[in-house]
Amino acid sequence: MKQDLFSKTQNRLTFRYSALLMIFLLLFVFIVYSLVYVVISSNQQQSLNMLLKQETKFVKSLLVEQNDQVEDEYQDIVVAREDAFFYYVVSPEGQLLMGSEASEGLRPKLLNLINGWIPIENEVRKERIETIHPNVEKFERNGHAEDEFKVSIDLLMTGQPIFYKGEFLGMLYIGKNVSFLYQLLKWLLVIMLSLTVLFVGVAIYMSRLMSKRAMIPIENAFLKQKEFVADASHELRTPLSVMLSSINALEMQDEVNEDPFSKKLVGNMKAEVKRMTKLVSDLLTLARSDASKNQQAFNKFDIKKMVEKVMQSVEPLAHSKNISLHLEAPDQIELSGDEEKLTQLMYILLDNGIKYTTPQGHVKVLIKQRPNAVEIRVADTGVGIHKDEQKRIFDRFYRADKSRSRQMGGHGLGLAIAKWIVDMHKGTIKVESEPEKGTTFRISLPQ
Ligand code: ADP
Image (cartoon, rainbow, N blue to C red; front, top):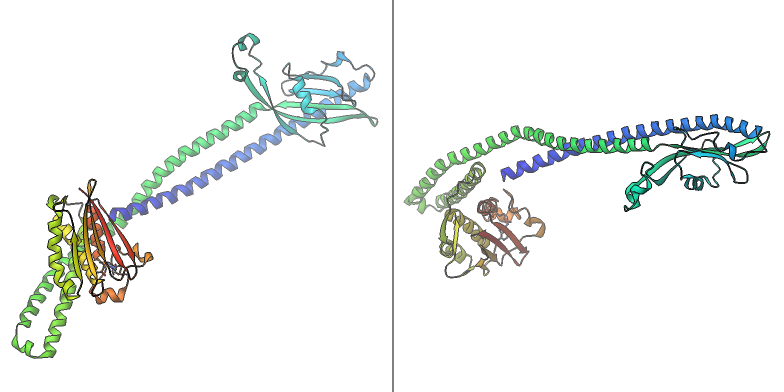
């Protein structure tokens, strides 16, 4: 239980530390990438627009000079260069007047892209075209699927109309290959995200280490407190047993027995001392359960016999409340476990069953052989437990109905001890209950 509590807190701390770090990392990646993207894109657009201006001047002078005879001979006057992937000059009628492109054979695709496009001032369009890698010769492609050699080219395109003395001479389009930059951006993103994943791994590791460190003083304080409870309960046992034997001796005195007031006082004292002895012994059991690292004393024993013995010892209590006890079990059923602790478990459950059942009720124990496990059910026809309280009844000092439980002499430690005993046997304990109808505790213990 202690381990559970600390590892839960540690996991929660680790999760929070690493989630925070992850958010910062992702934010960092997002900001850096967006900045780089915006800077590169605007830079590219600017340089394309500059190029367009220069080329426009040049093409304009050409068109003006040779207004009447722009034909094939001008096709190659402006050549697509490294920074201009293509350039085309289209007549007002939509005819290609001049043009060139970096990669032969792409002309139809490129013309298709600019067909009918009239860019507004400084408009830049981004397009992607698919083509076969220019270095792959036709014969190499024989026998291979075309897809294997496909490359995509990212283009930034712009264009501008050319006027001379108010006359529209044609449209100039220029495209720039920015594949390399987009590849660079893609890789930058991949690298940054991979680094983020790596850093998240490191962050989780570091957070775990840090949260572990943070837990050390808390764990020590918790341990000290447990030790204190264990020592205090242990020290309290001796004076309590001395008190009980003194009260027993007092009870035998004639003077006490003859005086009803003294007899009542001594009787009350005895009940309270017994209650306190039980509380101290339960506290000690739980304090030791926290400190001990499973000092198991497991041996094989007949569980039916053990349950019968417990039932015999609680029989007078049941009888005094007119409650009937039943046992249903196979003749012999063996279990490997700590007999003393399991006896205590049965005692707690039967005691509760009787305590929280009204007179004329029934408490029944059912033992069943399951595959590799023994199931024990303790069912009563008592007051029952509300659904929202069922989760909490195994907590220390939790009492569903405080006034009733106190009246019954309970202090809310019984089921916490029961749960610890079941846990140490690697079993499970579950409760099913309906208010005013009854409660069933279902325990499964591996054999
Ligand atoms: P207590 O000493 O108060 O009985 P437990 O830990 O044994 O403490 O039980 C916790 C609470 O669970 C009790 O206060 C009671 O309200 C409820 N409870 C336990 N067993 C039963 C039962 N058989 N029927 C109804 N309520 C029960």
